Image 1 (cartoon, rainbow, N blue to C red):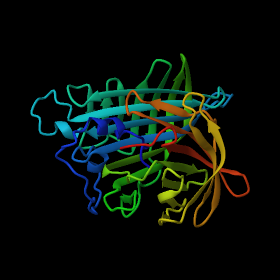
Image 2 (image 1 turned 60 degrees about the vertical axis):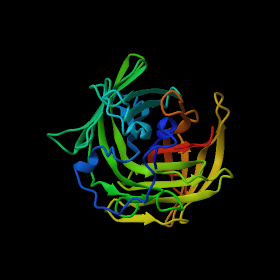
Image 3 (image 1 turned 180 degrees about the horizontal axis):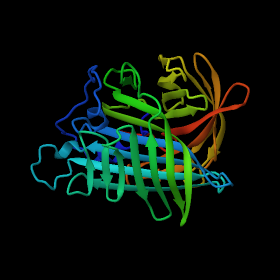
Image 4 (image 1 turned 90 degrees about the vertical axis):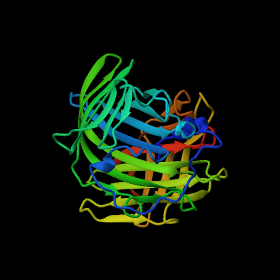
Length: 360
């Protein structure tokens, strides 16, 4: 759901002044308009563009990977009235990660910079994002195509992702509630079933890959209720062309403060889940040797129409982003199984607030 959708704003929120000139308010219902709403919304505090996916090497060994790339934009309230060009009015963060299923290892990196001076940019007209040499762009000549380039020391992503289905508005026509108060909400759309090709490089070895990806774009003024400890979220591309989103906000006791999501069938029939219609039940946990946080890496997920199991492809997919967003979270490639134990899809599971309470 968000962090994607990630924790982003933890550090930006920490930079905001207690007397900041902005206060949270309920987002109005509005019609999302494209391509404008593919771009940035700097008037709101928090925003992210989040792509996750599964890829397989074209070679005979069929080596499998998960990949994740996220660009965040965060408004710094305390600097909004400053006139200096050097005032950090917007921060741009980015995370990238590759899960090597065969090697049972997660590779990840992170970047942060203030917007401006050609170093970090987030266009308000379309998806055109840049942070140093990391980029995510919607192709101006072919608007149904995204290009991502994220080189790092130990790995690199060079991917092209093509739309195969219409975008999917989450919540009430793109306005998604995230808590018991109306101001805890976001504008939110998804683009599931993105046909993906390109290259993944690990420690100097480059793999030509094909696969399927999922894009979330979300922006908000306030996301988390004070009682929220964190969230659990999945975005799953099903093998038959369907798409499943499910999330819950948790209290410190582990109970659901809020939940929601959607299911779109291969025929395009969209069902929006109402609060209380989902049930997340942990089945197996993994304890991080780094943080000692205990994460449920297998879940039973009950929806109004189906019971699924969600199973991590590898257990250790914890990301430490304390040097950028200020948070530790688990985010990784996972399988979706039906009630008979058959794999019916793949996607990403994200869990925040297990190492420490998340504060946005």
